[in-house]
Image: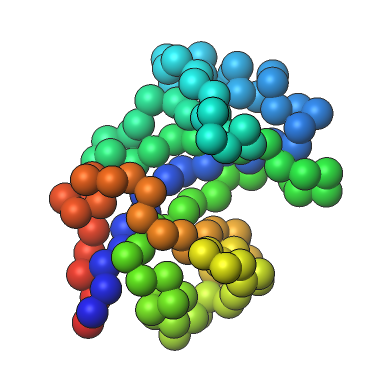
Length: 127
């Protein structure tokens, strides 16, 4: 048995477009933009409802601008297996997380729990 939920919505932009895009999304959200000191690739905006984090991500050259979701879980391997059985595929497996694609080819990630106590309040339990 494991638990998971959509925990983070990420707005991805290549480094050369990041500053203008990040400023736009902060204004569009009416939010204060906060750099993540531990992960300089990310800036945070105010959370969405249900404790879902809203993050801005600097991506490398060749990655198109996009929005992607992070599914956070207390068992990454079990969640990957559940989603593969539902039709997703693993694009890249890293030590602690996986980059995946849904059946329509949209990218998303399966990651360890990132939202702390909000996870317990909003996660779904899977058999």
